[in-house]
Length: 144
Image 1 (cartoon, rainbow, N blue to C red):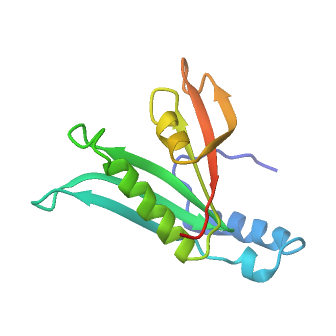
Image 2 (cartoon, one colour):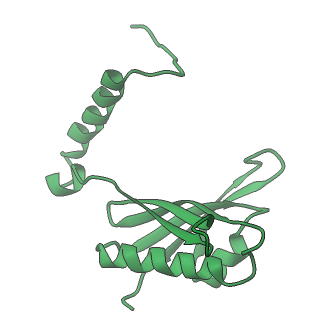
């Protein structure tokens, strides 16, 4: 057996490991859960000229919507734009049948923002990145 590390994996090899975990998961989960496609979406805040000044990138599967990124330009911070973005993302996720939102944020980023919007810390990674903490947060969505 050879162990190989690559920074440029080929698609066939990646598909093999995806299919392998799907096959294993079928022993424990129904096929509609095992083979559920990722639902990727984004929410944008744009200025009057159509320039993106903030946004959320997310993916959703297995009853959870995961906020991968939330960014606000300096000129939009503190003006409620982030709140509007997260409310729109949560509404979209709920409409698509997802029950939870989760995300990660760094100690110098948006932990208080997420907590203000009902997210709770469920985990911490100290010194990740070095000198900082990564917080893992979750929120149960409620029908609006």
